Image 1 (spheres, rainbow, N blue to C red):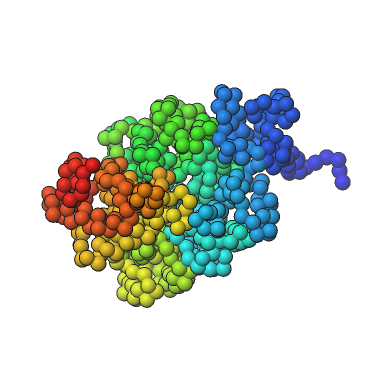
Image 2: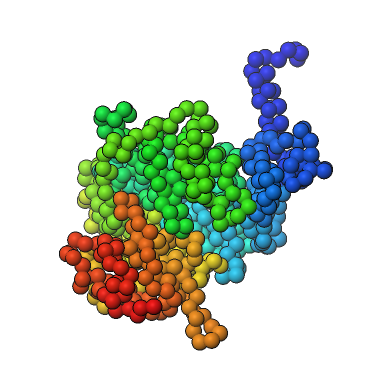
Length: 603
């Protein structure tokens, strides 16, 4: 063979050498594949012992951020040290070995295995939960059926639709967690990065592509961001979790203003120095569990630049987010400390160009969402076709029902199963002629395409039956509330959202509900407590975005159905007119006045 290399061979060798150097750089860090402590022998406070040991490779941005904070005299959180000691992706073979031995990942290994999508949920259950990542919440019917097969074989025979338009498989044994992860890959799905300090599954408008009022079909943007994340290791291991959503201005809200980054489809009008047309409006810093919505930055982004801008935002957060205090490690706190302009300036430095600003009067009013459009029959933009919103009991669906819904989607729809942030699902592409048969088939499997307004707007997190952080059985008591209200024949003729969450992580976003319940241990007697809730009122989202106010505390769970009935009856009897919403009604009264109207005891 000639001693000279061809041009193609040279390019291959250059790429190979660069790859080896990158791997060496990342694997020289503790646990980022290697086992050599970051800084080597003699390194101090995580700093390199000499210039040759400066981190390189895809993990460098994280290691450098850790080192800067240690150099400033701060102490890294245990989770940050765990990531530095052994990157969770590099732990896969060892975690697979634990599964072979029938052992659960515990302590910091429980943290590491969350990078792969598994969560040990002890002490509530001696089991794993697997959370998927599904871009825009849309699966093909055959994938939905395949998840049902996995949940039946390895889990509890059911799944939960989550408040991020996602699926969870529960009651997975120690030996079966890895089998679930690898089974998902066989289905063209993944759980990678769906937990811990990572960018979670990207949400979008559930009716994307079929919605008659949408400005943007969010599916291609959610898909692009999904694959962008999956194929860039440097986007894993953030200071804390990170949420991104695309709202195309369709009829079903994506709750993008509760995300760290919210891309809102808007129409820019002529005459404001910005090219007219449809853009993304950029909102940042949403985290309603910390009482904050994503705020308008004044920036508009060309549709095809969303992923590039999101990437830069995440990288500024990676470099500057708090890695010492887990309670302050979200994007909101960087924005609070810096202000929006400084943060956007750092984003622009990475982009190498200025972001486009548009005054508020340059933006046309966005179409309003319909709070009931996720349930029932609704016409699509495709003439003669409909989406069918299927009600689930607080997101739970059996594997048998999943297969039957997949059959219905294949026989009568477009083969898509669309999950929503309202813990239900849609079957799209149903022709007018088939609507009646689809409704009949859905009813035949124990589900429904209609529900009372209370039941339709009910949202609850996992609760203490499956989450160690929860103080109450949120799903159980939420179901009791809706069942009680329906049983007494109380009809609420306006949309009503009741959100029950178990802890201050607020997975069910209690602050944005018309009625929001957050779990609490309620004292009974001298030495005991029972499940209960603190109750908030007047929350909202979108153009009505408001953080709810606390109405009453320490209500026993068993008393909540009667309490909610009182609240709803008081609202219906005293509202200004039949158009006044529950949220608007509660906001125009002081808390003590509401207690009088609802016949509650005052503190």
